[in-house]
Image (cartoon, helix red, strand yellow):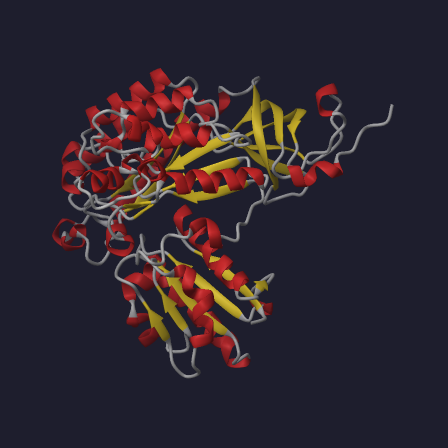
Length: 496
């Protein structure tokens, strides 16, 4: 099969990685990437349904594609991901010109299913859960967007029942990949030149609990060390327990991996051994995304979050005491049904006490099938939500600004991402704490350690910070510490 494909991704990092897997399935069938929709033969919309406006985005994009397809009848339109999983046949009813609809459990089949598309009908294949014979197959089919940084899926699904969250309905129950399979994938990535990996899961803290429980119950047999790792296998009692701390240590020991990140943990499941691994493994970055959602104990109870504000702050303080220079970010929902002014003030108090480096703040959005959808009689007025949202932003920006100002004068290790969005004269990268850093575009560096090298995406630099803003810091490059393997032949040496 020949032709070109274009994928537009909506939503979280898990969706970003799913899109890499979809791309891999298409490349495997002989297609290549298009530069945009205009030169694509296949357009895939990989959807999200966490927010209500995700539905509007999908059908708005489909309306645009309908006009394109009328002028190019051969164009194939594919809808994949969480919203497809939620809406199923509804997508084809609302947009009958769509050629294929696939859900979250079979996204890697997009390439194989293209040949089954028939003119005038929509191929809909939605699985209700993962199929063992398919496996997660993450490493084998991913066509990654970056040569130096990679998403690595360690787990799908979620066993929590947060009242506002639709994820369990569209991603299913928790299902962990075998320990050895993940280590093998990261080892292969390191050998290919990847130096940074981000471990993905709906609740990474609970990774492996299902595996160890299944081993104890006799539902999994075979190479136990491959499935659960050597630390758990060698433990005398082999009690069912999460394996995330063990995984951090194993991934952190792989040669060539300079940075290990993960997202997202759940505050109710954070464990001391995970904090210890973060503190003791040099390659695990000093950044913890720690979703608060609300600072009100009554709202947290209605959300079914499993912790209160005191426990949350205690865990946060413990992490900061154990991990020097730890950056903390969070998620907060404004306007959850029944949120009173006192509830919101409690959120402001916790946010202020937590002194976050940054936050993703959201206005509550009711999702079909969730418990919160039925709380219509407790809805908060939109104008009240808007006022609260702005007040929260002030608190978050204040602490973020203070944290970034405190970096001025320091030399930070930065991994280069590339030109900034606004100017090719300014490049951007990330510190170990995941701070966004801007610095001048590549040029020869007058530093013996750098050997006059020009840096490229994937390089590691020392940058002296001279400016701090609420959402970024800025500085001057003082040395180039590492150049990606693929770019090393391009090293330029300054003449004497």
